[in-house]
Length: 63
Image (cartoon, rainbow, N blue to C red; front, side, top):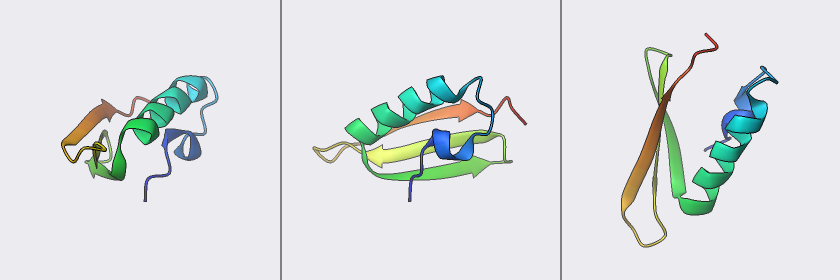
């Protein structure tokens, strides 16, 4: 289940930005999954409300 960036992040300097990303994902996608590659690249993939697949990826600079 998708918990959002803000629940995973301990760095309060980037908390505001990650909360906005989490809100956008949750407002626009359902069935969101988090996929990690080498614990550095993070891919969030989900379905739009009309059934198409969409996603976003990011790097974790805080590692």
